[in-house]
Length: 523
Image (cartoon, rainbow, N blue to C red):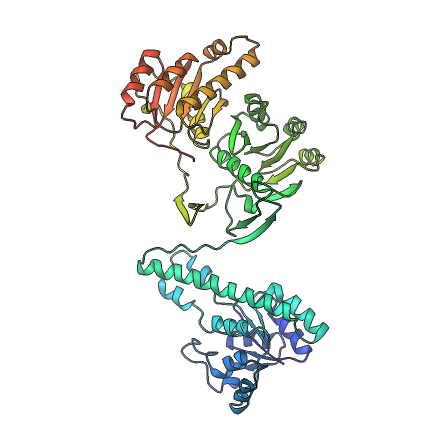
């Protein structure tokens, strides 16, 4: 039995070759791997002895030879194939252990030249993998060191790998070469300025129990790239497996949290919309305010914080029925307390400032929409004001807060708040006035409950609210209803042909209004 070993990733390869040799296999190898194996005590036959031809062109040509590919591709069950090998003095190769030049690692380096990239395009390696994988009925092909143990175990037990294992390894080899070719094609097309083709590479992270509904099957795939605010790399510390809807909601919560880095922030999310969000001097204060914003909707929701969850905060979270709690870290006593709820999913999420994937993908029937992520959020500043009335410093701060929140609410979206907390959220309505009515009524009811008042509108008028809209006002009706509830300042993108109507109405009502000239629709 013969094994051809030629690898770039030499993890465990010496031990693998020594074990094969001990089991009676002859080892064939190419120059770089050969030196490593010989240094490890493996007896190796150079591939040039098998081919009768030296390695040439700086190693570009060494295994591209009939004595290699004939040995791999000949079907053992076809007499004519075996006769051809005999006539040409070719002996079969029964195992190929190959992984490829580090092309992706090379092009990821800063300042890499095209010459360097091209020299790291493997030719012989993919050819051997494909040949061995095609003849999987007879040839074992190994491209990942993680499979060395399985292969050796079966050879020790039965003298060779099983048919099922060879088929699985063949599939892995074709996957390896497909991913490799995809990376090369993407790079070369970009260098040549050819029209884009979109290649996607995602690995299965988790089989899900079902999708949005029990009759839908679902899976969770990961790009494999380290990225902050990502569930794909989050560490689950407690609770049941995440469901499809959990992942959707948790991702929405993380997108909100990433808007706030300079001060403690906490939010609750239901159905991918915030039901309460707030900043505070501590994470405890932020959670108290977020919870008080809507004590009803958070039931069965998700909580995300941008600071460590301490014991005091955990004590407030524990009595509430929640699906998930997420934070960058948990104090040991807080984690112990939350773990007493065995079904509560606790996720430790990297909330650092590392590189993030720059595009967003959405499947549609028969196609795929691709867009840049909406990662930019304008700072709300006093010079954005377009009305006679100007916002106070505290109102300006609150406008900045609600502007970051409304960006992450389903359109049409209106968010009402004050003192660094949401009080009303109007999401996903077919018209903007409907969203405004929902948000303002919710804010008024919350304030009345907090103050013990019997007149919600009166409670709202006393509070001094601010309002944010994710899109422009097509009419002045949103300004008019905001005035009924005592809103003192509004932030919106502007850009309607009727902007002057809204500005005029705001001036009539003594409301400060700011235009960011930046829209944040979220369908």
